[in-house]
Image (cartoon, rainbow, N blue to C red; front, side, top):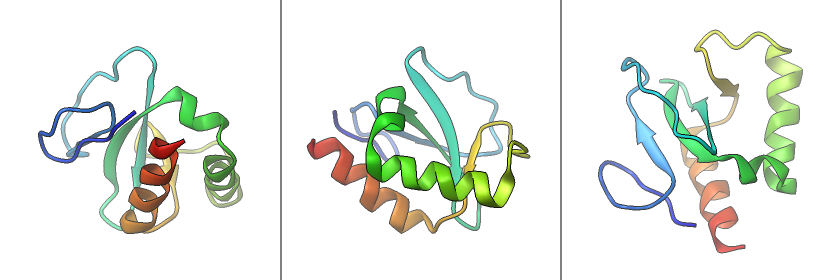
Length: 90
């Protein structure tokens, strides 16, 4: 699996949070960073130990309330991108 930022062809996509965009089958929308940047990630990421830790942080901070309409993860964008790139190598 690869990832995409601003138009490169792969399976990990970055989209502006202000746009209403459908999430493709097999993916989930997540919001990260101070600007709540939206990413679509493969559902398979949710089972990875690194991502499980992010989900735990999201649960601790937001419980089940996610104001952006997708999963909100309380980390900096660059940290999320680093973790996502590591998961792509597995």
